[in-house]
Image (cartoon, rainbow, N blue to C red; front, side, top):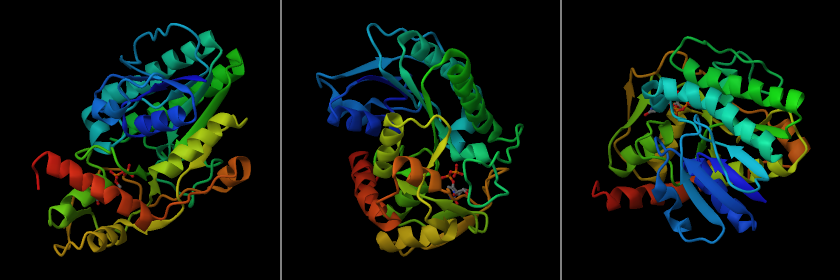
Length: 316
Ligand code: UDP
């Protein structure tokens, strides 16, 4: 397949590029580099089946030649990013999805949307199955991301229903691993960086809110299986192992032998979900997929990468 990945220089887009190339496909990675970084794809420079195009997908997308699949992963994805870039976040979810779907229609390509567990908002149903409609505050600080992704899902289904575009929707739960931005403000980069530097981990609020963390290779496997499947309706891909943020901090401190402990900070954003855990029955059933990497194993693969990055920047 000749595959376009929007957000191809981002954390997930770059790992997906690696996987698709390894499977023998041709990859065109597109990114405006607002939150993506060419460092993530530097190792692919010169690869005969890889091309990078710097472009903002909210503007008309032109690709010469055939395209068999489009993975639409372009978007700011961390709460501090979408607080700083609220309009861009809304534009890429709305206008960017429209442009990418228009290209899929034109090329007869299969289209896969990167959606999110944030479509469930601060959930009142736990764990979250795909049948749950969610509990989102449209005008809260997270609304720009949540509603953009909800709109993107609606647009994707409309192109499927009215234009016959072959579409897929993945709802991605918290994912971590090498190539996350060190300063994207999310809990995994924050805690690992703080722990490596021997600083106390900043737990927002009382730390009793929960998240379920999946290692990036599990996400990539789930997305690849979904792309090759016939499932049009959304599928959750996440690791159901659920931890409080306080427990998560303790695990990171243990794995890094950090003795600085934790400090509580009053920095929770409004509408920060109190709980989050994927119900993955559907992914098990239709994709025969389940996560293979435990939190501890995944962190052991991620911590050395952060260490190397910090050393390279002279921060250690
Ligand atoms: N969080 C924290 N300390 C940090 C960063 C985040 O306690 O330094 C908390 C945050 O309030 C949230 C959870 O960790 O409850 C996960 O936040 P993240 O930004 O990683 O992503 P989210 O799942 O909220 O989109």
